[in-house]
Image 1: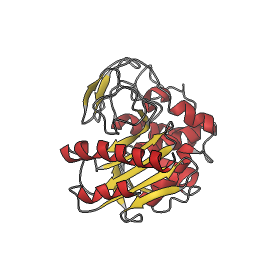
Image 2 (image 1 turned 180 degrees about the horizontal axis):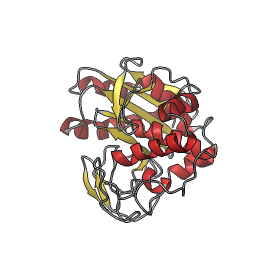
Image 3 (image 1 turned 120 degrees about the vertical axis):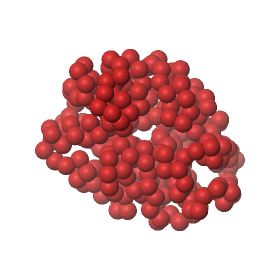
Image 4 (image 1 turned 90 degrees about the vertical axis):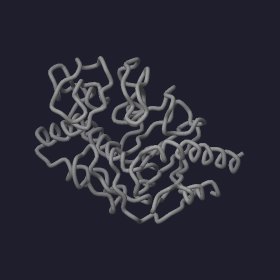
Length: 274
């Protein structure tokens, strides 16, 4: 895909991108697909998927109490527990505001470890990463932001999100629908969004503007971006996913280049499949 050459203009030392069709085929890639990059918050997609797998297996339930009083696993996955971003402080009643919380994801992992009597990182590896062949992906720190991976590995994960084999398709469908609709919040790096829609661990584009995906990405697009200069989106309307990894932290540069890059990918893919 010629559109992927746009990464050559990004102000970074190293970058890798991949485009994955709904059937799991990698239809385009550029950059070193085996180079490890820090994921930052893209880690949340992996951790949330492991929690969803634990729910399927009966180790947890969405409405189990977890986190602040009145909060559940559902609230924590949807950044609606009221927990602060990183401090052990409750900023709101559960379900009232979308408060993006690294701490909330860490609490989820701790809750799993306590109830399943198994380290979360071990479950993530055995339940999700190894079955998908993601052998270069590791959780080296916080389940919220401490992962490292490669474009090749994340392409396998993006294929799973579009055509699930580990998780049940109904689980993915539920996780990528808006949870606690209508509540407002701040999308990190982009300011207050009204509403700030989120699924179960997956951010949903919906009507958010500005946004890190393209202007032509459908409202149903879901995924995440990371402070390390990383992103992964799945557009179910286009039948396409895209992974982007770089070695420069998110900032003005990424806010400028990511949306037109995504638009170019979507446009080229549509032309190739017209």
